Image (cartoon, rainbow, N blue to C red; front, side, top):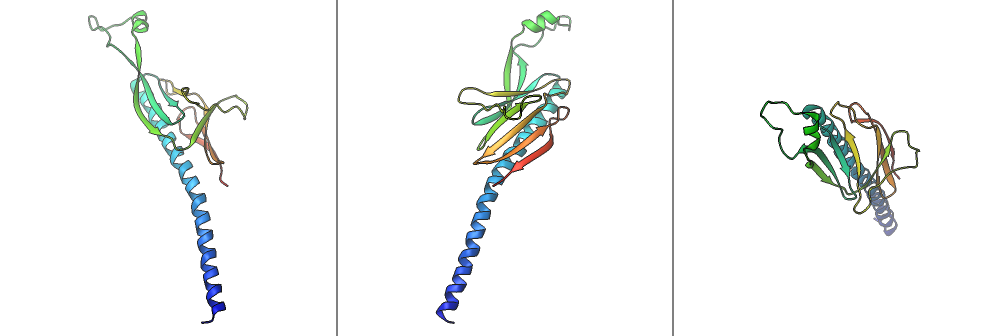
Length: 173
């Protein structure tokens, strides 16, 4: 084997390793986006199902570093003297938020409500958060969720009856 053949063989191996590492890095971004997208869809589906099952509102609260599934619970149970509670008594009872599930974000998530311009994405910052509510009737607000990671993104258009992905757009560089 000559020195020229050895140099050519090593150059080809280096080229293949370089191409493989570039495709692996690009795939890592897509995996991070897909992981967050599947967690968001699972949490929204669970929130929708729980709102219908328990007949009370639930919502996703999207913060800068995590997403929480929250339900509205009453602080005290209704009086049991006659079994009936008036609307006034129901409104007087204080409600509190109960966190049912959550996951940490390693990507940025923003939300766009239905009927709003394409460029108006709402992203939570520092101490603020964005909410998406599921009604006890089974309806939820029609929204789109955008997940971004290092210039790549997935946009999920959520169905208002099922709270699952209706349509998806993706951009990976």
